[in-house]
Image: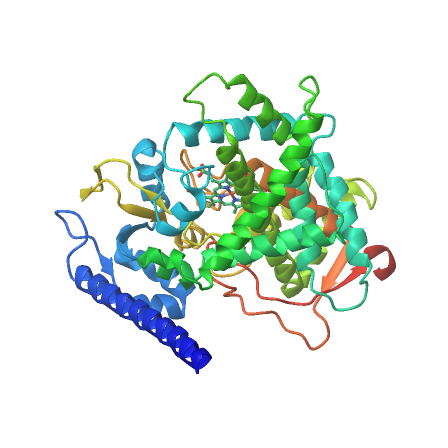
Length: 501
Ligand code: HEM
């Protein structure tokens, strides 16, 4: 009897909790809807898109359609109106000409819970962010100038990747893990001084965790959490995000402790060594931003941002190559004509491989892995094109619209490397190529990512031919929408060029 009562007690408490949570959620939705009827900020009302169901159903089509509302428009992505910058010109006006005002980051409950304002990616526009960013940029550069350049590391890693893929030669396989492991090894070698084998189970688990968190943080779960932040006190899928984050930090912390024991200040091995030395140098400075919390968060930021983005672009690249075998063949022929089968590509080869270089850009334009970039916020009241914008207004650059702008691309709606070639077949830049955003918050890893994409891609097409397995078709190009637009699972068949031609 006692246990039945205890059971009933437990069930009713849980029920009460669920009912309570649901009512709060419904109230919040009502509150949001009523606040939506108020015009978004400004004496001149901004074109306002309030159609959230359409956004949820097909976000990419919705995002692409936004320019029809004007150069800037606003929508709700949670509690507050978010201003969307739909053209390159307006994005420059805000993020470059008025960079200090437009480079804040919103303090959203989920990121506040996880990051506490530390690190780089979601840190507010502050002295701490500036110092962490500058330090990371310098250190990435320094460790690329060490004994082995970043280019050499990427070329070497590409060889491992090709070898790994050839283990499955002629058989359909899902290339996600080897690609992610290979890409991650580049940032790992800079941060941790080491790479990880593709069959390292512990590292594979870590990459799964990273994948999982990128997916969860970009899912509706994050929106719900941001509406009802007290959820953090209750069980639910958001606890998984927390556990994953803890596991990531624990892994990094262990590596940091190993580094501390073997640190030689005269012979720095990697980012962690450089950070430990900076912490020691600034020990007596009370205002120093170089402390354990910032170190762990900066490392998770670099590890996360440096893995998912480039790995996803390469996966999209394979899909576009299998969909466009003629482009794949043309790249291969150009690469072999210039490098032969054996010479490693380097970034100096870019000017001799215009078609391949254009193809890498076209992959990035179509992959569009950050459809709305990363959210910014205004640090003080300001004006943009006559609109008054209060401090703390959320702003997103519509990278999707800019990368597909009908007026600035020869073939905006199709995959075509000609978008980056002139009439003589030479590579030509396009100002609307805005995959890495711009201004003070521009992607910190842009140079690294460009180097990785070119060398991985050129090496893969030099040595391998990719095709769809018989009967398989290209996966849905919508991918999954989140903070990173990821590919849906797909199988490929690869064959060594030496045996297949
Ligand atoms: C194809 C690859 C990549 C793409 C398309 C990409 C794109 C972006 C975009 C759109 C942003 C947001 C900029 C803004 O707030 O306006 C960003 C930020 C950032 N990216 Fe990348 N990224 C890539 C690779 C990398 C790599 C390899 C690293 C590693 C070093 C990296 C590190 C960062 C960091 C740390 C930030 C935050 C910068 C800040 O807030 O100051 N990214 N990236």
